[in-house]
Amino acid sequence: MELKKKPNLVIGRNGAIYFAIGLNIMLFFTWRGLEYRTYDEKEFNRELLFFSDEVEEDIPITNLEMTPPPPLAVSTAPEVITIVEDTKEIEETVIESSESNQQDRIEEREIAIEEVAVEEIEEEVSVPFSVVENVPVFPGCLGKSNDELRKCFNAKINEHIRKHFKYPESALDLNIHGKVHVMFIIDTQGHVSGVKSRGPNVLLEREAERIIGLLPVMEPGKQRGKPVKVPYMIPINFQIE
Image (cartoon, rainbow, N blue to C red; front, side, top):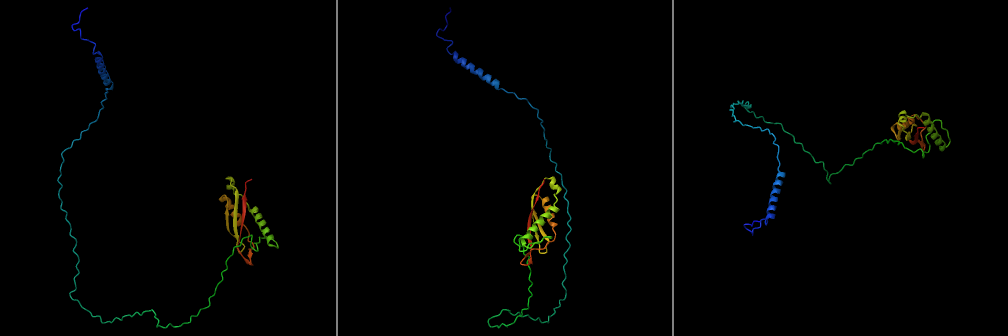
């Protein structure tokens, strides 16, 4: 075995430090190699804009001939001015005050009042059917008392409705049914007027008003011996069997 030239020198004394340094250098280059990126070059259209020298054009100066306005017409004054004297005297109108004072005496006058004819206007009174003294009499009703005439009136109204009742075909097709309340007035002449109705549909209301419009002329109701208007209301039930 050969002896070392320098026996005190240790070769592997700093080997760990060199190894760490080398390892870090290799890791750095490896990281940079992984992070290195390349990009594709794209073609771009490059347009160049060239400006030429401005060309100044000489604009000819034109003289605009302005026509002068026409001269103003000057009225010539008359050569001789004649002065005419006004010899007519103007009468002044004196306005007297119409106010009176305590010294003025007021003349006493008698004012005659002519007779004025006062025309009496009879007001048409409306009395409900249930409280009127004499109920309207339906044609064909006979009775001595007011209750008998009222029962006969109701019976005749129902008979009239059954006789002229006709269910609207359009309401049947649409399955429209319900109760219609009809209100009308028997006036002082016994005619039926002011027919109004309220129901679930217009078709039923029109049919109810048509039936009531066919009522005959009656004997009007009376209150204290004078004809009065008598309102009456009856329900008409439209049912589909």
